[in-house]
Image: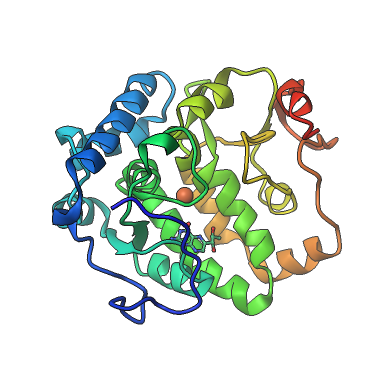
Length: 290
Ligand code: HBI
Ligand code: FE
């Protein structure tokens, strides 16, 4: 059931108008389940002392340690009991409005395919390991679950206001690549980090990237790269604070204001930044990216 790129204009045959498809759990091969197990073992070995408490607790709540690709029906019993969220299968990337509508209604869309054995370290398309191992444990945390639903509502609004570019950066620098401060130490929680062996180490330990205190406006003005380790990580003081800022901010005037301010290049440090690490950017420079 390995799969290649899907960025479709219409729901494929067999998909509903909401783009969901059956997970078809019975169709996974032994090799597919084995790929999950390899990735699972590799990541869980790395996570104690690195991952946020919320993420580690979510892994336990969801009983993802049982082996093999999770069956969404079973996973959803535990997830829905915890926070009211459920996971639904989709064939790949879905249109933005569909994605946000699901989130606003506490449905997280997950690719139902798993990467090939020659793609263990990296693939651009979100597969079931990235989507389920990376994202779903945080959805079992009540505060983060509320943040994600608020993000979905905000996404629908941003589409109307023509501000998706700005809001997508918030998702990128929190949900996908966020760090959090816990008892004075940095921890990873972003799905793109916790589902990647290399970036789990790089994001916390490497001297190359900047680590900067989270500021909503700053984040929404900052460009990002999708094809390599990040040059900036933004650190939230807590998920309560992230949720609070997101629900209390009136985004329409904020979009109007930052629309006139221009974008911040990747890797830049600003005078008002709360700098936790002023990165060397050696990694990015060596790759010709900075
Ligand atoms: N579709 N399956 C899937 N997964 C995503 O993360 C996703 C998507 N469609 C659109 C989308 N993300 C973007 O709108 C957000 O990253 C902002
Ligand atoms: Fe993701």
